[in-house]
Amino acid sequence: MNSIPVLKIEKLPSAPVTHGRSAEIYDWEGDKVLKLYFKGFPESDVDTEYSNTVEAFRCGCTPMECFGKVEYDGRFGIILKKIAGVSMTKMPEKNPLILFKAGRLIAEQHVMVQSKHSDALPDLREKAAACLDGEPLAFLPADTREKVRAYILSLPAGNSFIHLDFHTENILMDGKNIVVIDWMTAAKGRPEAEVAMMDFLHHHAELFPGSSKAQLAFYTAVRTFIYNSFLKNYVRLTGMDPAAAKPWMIVALVLRKGLWNIASEKEYLEGEIRRLAEEIK
Image: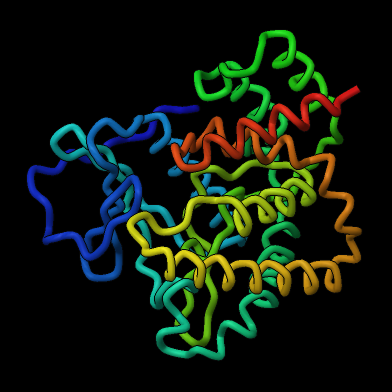
């Protein structure tokens, strides 16, 4: 990856307007935002998001343009075009009926993104294979890791844009437009891998930390409803047999464990990866 020029800033423009698991968002020059990662977040991952966002914009996957990279007090960030709207997660607070359209809208965004092609992105198979060398996958014996690696690399290649974190928090809506954001994990590959990841995200991914049991039960029901609608509409739009995603499930789970390594997902991911590894002939 070529070196990305860095603008060093001495002070922040304001208080953050919001924050996520890894970064804070600040208003920047009126029509832009600064996504500033927390201290200790790897600079290489910031560079990856910069490059992937530039490529996603170039290919027409998103109108979210990336203008540069900054450093503030040992923290790195990127400057992005400000996009109007709120996340699809929060949209039902304004329009509860959106829940009944969410699955279709997400499926349409998947089809749009996957219709774009790029050879500038990392191959998701190679990305998953590299995860097997990291600490999060060290629970697997060495011979099992090599068996899984060989299986993953034997799967068919592709160059469709694959997001790999395509949940409702990464989809912005303003009532007219829908915009997909957060391209750090993007890769090139086969659409079946994205469908496999969607299965995990809507059934087993960590929900909102700190939620009550009642809230978690509600969120679980909502995301299951959204997923079922998504899959029905995705199959209608693409003609894909849902069973085609099954061979890619271990790829999705290895990527999830290797890239995120979320404590609350550890038991499920490790157990399921072991089970799927045993099924590899």
